[in-house]
Image (cartoon, rainbow, N blue to C red; front, side, top):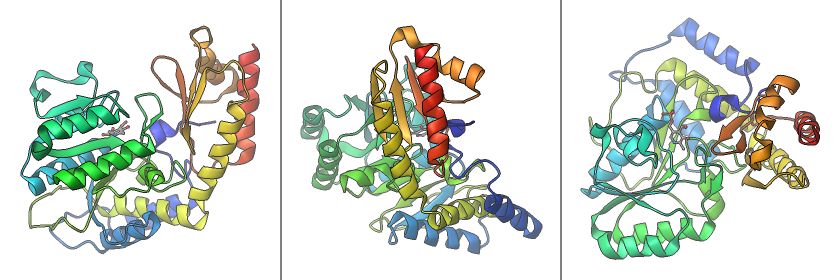
Length: 347
Ligand SMILES: Cc1ncc(COP(=O)(O)O)c(C=O)c1O
């Protein structure tokens, strides 16, 4: 039983019939052609995404991964503002390519060639540090990039006041608010983008993981104030026919099966039940993005869940079990997990 989905990628379940059908039918027509021609399925995807995410006036640029989505988001912010400085936060993860990794708070994955003074790290959820950074360099700040819920960082939510403050400071200083929704987005928390919870609109949303249910695809959803110009962003494989067929099938299933509602309901149920276990240190997250923080002496629980109960979960350092199941998980499956966890904690 897979409650991790390869880092939040499997959004509608492995081998969902609608997904298999959509990809097979597309492959029988055409699998790939470059963006040098118009690709109507991209337009359908942009339209559907706008509708399901509630951002109908946003434009879509398609690429192949989360890092690439953030790379393009930061590049677009810099084109738009003419500035270079980026604010990122402690424990953030934005990818492993040049600018994305430079904005990631993990020096062990930063090669010397990726090092840059353009990225400034601030403590997460610290209003005062953010206010000071804008007061000191506001006119130089190109973008603020933040996950709505940090995934790799251990399932930590950005607070509502913090997200609102980012919005107002970006408005005040003409900086770009980038909502990294690669892991926490695409319906996982019950909102389409987890930042929606704070009732703020970002200028750019980056996405990938759950978007193609395993087929590599990423993208950025771009506010109307950005005007596209020919050749500003580009890619060979991004938005190819097969990737779009995968992404369209995912959105169709999300819509038809009301998966945002399911993610909110089953997620709340799981979190409420998990909070009843007295041996768990802390339960964090929202919807189907859940971190179960265990004390050191229970560090074998994750492995035992796999080897003894055949339940696959993820982890975040040092001792957090990360649950990122498909958005169509049922209550029965949630209960199976809770029973198994109870068994392991007792053992
Ligand atoms: C929040 C976040 N942003 C970006 C990325 C990078 O995505 P990818 O591995 O597809 O490049 C990840 C991957 O874990 C992520 O969790």
